Image (tube, rainbow over all chains, first blue to last red):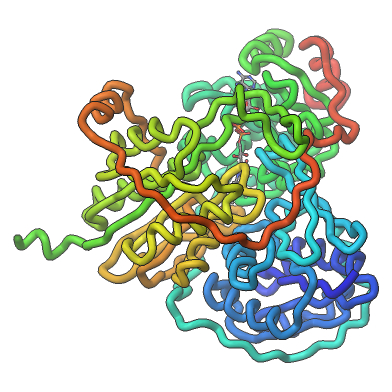
Length: 311
Length: 256
Ligand SMILES: Cc1cc2nc3c(=O)[nH]c(=O)nc-3n(C[C@H](O)[C@H](O)[C@H](O)COP(=O)(O)OP(=O)(O)OC[C@H]3O[C@@H](n4cnc5c(N)ncnc54)[C@H](O)[C@@H]3O)c2cc1C
């Protein structure tokens, strides 16, 4: 429909998958216009990986993400390029950029986008609200959209265009935010990205003492223990067990989710697992949409009965 | 007086918002575009709860002098504000005025009300219903002050804060942010404290919620909502009727 600009994301010299996912979709949406990718710092040297782009705009700057400098540079590029649609990841970095760009440019901001299509003279967006319990469709002719990871194919972003690589200059803000350092995660006892079978617990487990129930089940199934974010925030399990957007992406053969609702941020880390079994009291929990098998009921009752059958 | 020198004089505003409790069944209203809010329960946005906790921790560490909790008028807001005071906020302010739709208009109201009166504004990183952007960075952009989101740790200095921002897989970055600033909090340094009902009741009797009226929201750019509906089932799970069936499945998959 017009010109689409993707703000790419990278970490430690690699483009994040979300960059390719957005780019592939941008290419489809930019019929009649051009599909551009904005890259920062030395990622310019990796521009050729952005195969779906017609243009790669290199702004330079530091490789280390900085909310102030990255937003400031993107803002200027958008002001000189006038894209119809700006795609930003619904990610930790994207949360610092998209709302700032939308307000500064007086463009609508569309959060939690899982689908973007063309509808007449407008783009039509699907936002996953209420932790994935409702889909809201909205339309706008121009917007800044925050794209949920895993919504589009990353492969589509790697080919199809023949990008011209252009250097563009931008101002990087006034230095009110200073990047200091990256802080690496603590070493994990178990690397859940390597596990064959995972028993994952969510807030439905209720309390720290009840984790034992899941631990027992995991032991009997020769599985490792994983969890959703609130379980980590509550201090019931270590960060290294966390699956999802701000945790780890896992790919065991079997993933058993106990008392996990299936928020988009959790699904990001496990939805490609080939066998997902969900146990939840709420029959409408979004986890049942991505699970292959489900049981509605109390996880404690089910675990107890399961233990009996196992022994 | 000597002690006072070590103290950081930081005035903190914490923005709170009530959101539908997702444990409830959600239904779409007659318009087909919005949630039917008549029968649902509301609760404090969980990330706002973390923002408040981190603010109270800052004060306890002598790195903040005053915490003011703000909320827009709405469902069960008084309860949230009294409970914020019970947890450690020094004051609570309720914004009355025009009805707002969405986070972006709410951000505009907060921008008008808060202005440059606070050194630090803390709020939850996101909420389950902010369809049109996240409060923290939108507000910062309106106030033209810096913002860092997805923050899990804040340390106050005299004219700046050092924050940890979380990326993924436990990877984080540390930033120094000049004040005044806005922070979108993901998680406090510790589990948010619980305010006992008795304490909330006591506060309710002794403290008052200040009311401030905000004049209005000019039309900000927004997309047009066409429909709201529960997601269409894409295949979905095969529902197992009994633990025996589950056992059989686990055996078939080579797990049990
Ligand atoms: C920037 C950002 C990053 C995030 N990153 C992540 C991430 O990496 N990983 C992640 O998981 N989340 C992440 N989140 C949080 C995410 O949005 C959800 O809040 C979280 O996934 C919810 O976890 P949950 O399903 O365990 O809890 P809830 O959503 O509270 O669900 C609990 C479920 O348990 C069920 N239940 C309750 N009792 C029982 C019982 N007795 N038996 C069976 N079922 C029961 C309930 O029906 C409910 O479905 C992130 C959020 C943000 C803002």
